[in-house]
Length: 254
Ligand code: PGA
Image 1: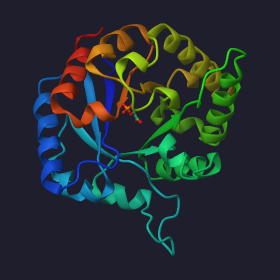
Image 2: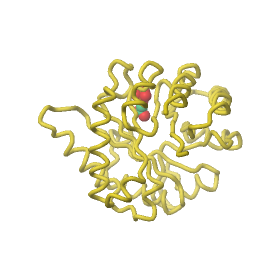
Image 3: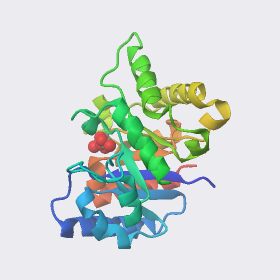
Image 4: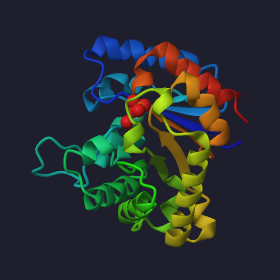
């Protein structure tokens, strides 16, 4: 059985170590009842070393970013080898909120390679700012995806997780999130672009997940009809009750 993936992206929350422990404990508790999901929690980097010993076979930690260098004069950065040494096995790369602060496709590409070099899993975010009727957003998505992952070698393709996160759907409510049938179409499109980059056989090995206002209300529909293998959940992952409901909905899907 190939497990689904649900990632809790806490962004710059919560405020204290105590709150982060509590939130993580709540996830560990519900995850122990799940069989079909790999649950990944991505807290602010400052909390990683505190939570790392509390990881278990159902819940893993992930950084929200990483730098491509190994060591050196890069104030404020940390490397893939550092998070690996800590016991963290994956990293979000290219989140739209990082891209909005100036991260380029080239930065993303270098970070993806650095993460793979350390045998970690890159969760690469892509997503258009807005939709247009002419389909320009598809060209944007294709270019962004190619620029972010084209240099990945075939032997590493199966480690890639692509998180499709349309920016217009992030941080809103279930009503503003993507329609599951439209999501299904975009995922087919992403798979086509992956096929162009890696060939059909390898393109099938990439895990594609969705993020953008996943909430208890839409989780079930999106996982059943959206053609994705999981979610990247932002605001709803900060509410233990809501996050549990999302996990339960994914667990219940086929
Ligand atoms: P959201 O965030 O669930 O709050 O929309 C998703 C994300 O930005 O990863």
